[in-house]
Length: 420
Image: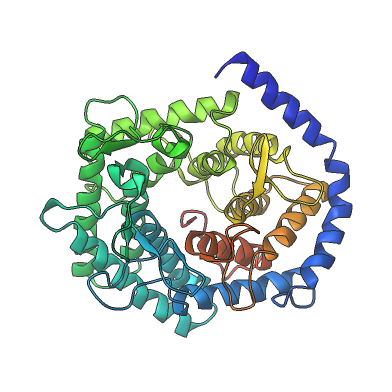
């Protein structure tokens, strides 16, 4: 990172700080706006609780998962305006498995919904297992209509494989049958072996491997970056024996490298991967040499670093509670809002981000996020797109549920480990 960019980021952050004093007032205004939405009940917690139930129902019954045909069990990236899945996506299917594990582990609104989540998870796991048969791997985006091409299919991405492996092992832990858990871990090992092949001989996780040598455009997703903190943390959380020792070392070095970069300055301008990096810090298991570790409600010195990085990022929050998609501005995206909200709520639950100012800022985030939830539970990516986005729905569900049940002891104690 150049010194010029560091100064620019600092200046942008300082300018954004002037909006802090307005946030508490903006939260009240945002609450009034959100109250006009059909999903909002009486009071903010009631509104977020109802929205979470609607999004949960949509994720289970709204067509996000393919129900029949050769792609049965796969999960769509989004549904078009007619409610049809446009493409299926390995990364998003991995997220869906983690979401189904989250629901089955105690976050579902009812035992019936928990049972539905387990059935959907089995189908998603079966799709991934079939896709890996005979050494194969599903395309990054597998379009369901003929004649569609996508530059992403010229690469096999480390991040996608890591999210799939994490989803597989997270869901496997909810299955009472040992033989199914063992079979799922075999699938996870196959995914990790693909990552191992991409990163062979590398010091840090590589972004991707190309298919047929085709070049990929220069984007954050095609470069190593802070999002690889989440990939490394996900891989380091898989059960013993799934990850080969060389890849364990690569993941640990990746974690240390990008943690240091995040602590110093912004490694990229997009908030989505920056938030992935913070999520990776929350997900990362303690280093083998560390004493103790993160516990629910316990003291963890590493969380102080997370708080500092998150505080710096939230210096970009606007007076209306929103965050733009980059440090320099841009559209407001629901995935970014949901990511920021759930990180803030997790930190508050662990005794950080103290004070009324932070309470108001997170309330403003929640109000802004509610504006993207439709009465049927669909979640829009941004205000200029009238399509139902699946990963935004999963992120939003967790954020809204955590907001409505922040102090509820019925939430599973592993909820931060199941951060989608």
